[in-house]
Image (tube, rainbow, N blue to C red; front, side):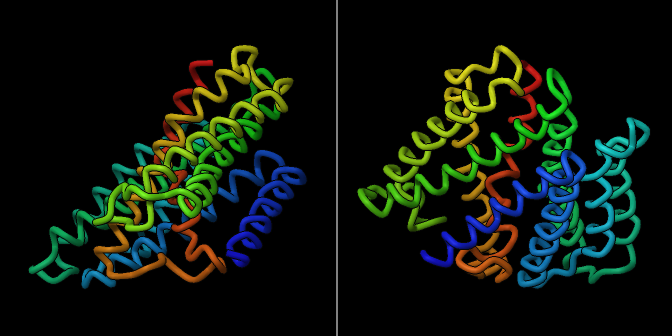
Length: 272
C-alpha cells in the first residue's frame, strides 16, 4: 500500500508539472508516451498467449494515431491511420505468420491498436479544446483523469473497509459492489469539487452539480475498463501488465481506466 501511495503521488506530480510547464503540448506527448507503453505491454501479454502480433508496426502506427488529432491539422485523421493498419496487417498476415494462428494474430494485432491508441487519442482531442479559455482542454483532461482514477481509490478503500459482496469473482476476485459504490461516490465528489474550483476555465454550463453527475457514468466505465484489462491478464496468465510502476504494476495497470472513459468524456464535453 505504501508503494502504491508513493507512486500515485509521484505520478500526479509528473502530470501537473508537465502541464504546468509545457501546457497542452506536454499533455499531448504524455498521453502519447502512455499510449505507446500501454500498447507495448498489451502486445507483450498477447505473446504470453502464444501468439506473435505485429507489435513493431503496431507501436509506430499507434503513436501516429495518438498524435494525429493535435498535429495533422485535419489532413490525416486517426480513422485513416487505423484503416492503414488494417491494410498492412492484412497483407503481412498472408506470409509472415504460422497458418495455425493467422486469424488470432491478425485479430489481436488490430484489437491492440483500436483498444489502446485509438481510444486514448480522444484525450488528445480533449487537450486541443481551447474554448471558452485557452486552458479549458487541460482542465477537462485533469478532471477526466481525476474522476477515473479516484474511482479506483474510493473502490479500494471502501472495499477494504466494508466490502462483502463480490462483483465479478471470475474476473477480479477482490472487487466488491460496496467498493464500486464507494468509488462512484468519491468520483462524484471529486468531479463536483474540480468543476467548482476550475469554474473560470470551464464552460458556463459545466456547473459543480453537472460535474458530479457526469462523474458517475465516467467512473462506472472506469470500473468496466479495469475489468476488461483483468480479462486480458487472465488470458495471458499474468497478475500485472508489467513492473514499471512500484505498487501499481505496468503502465497498462495505470491507464486501463482511461481507455473507455476518454471517448465518453470527449462526447460529454462537446455537449457543453
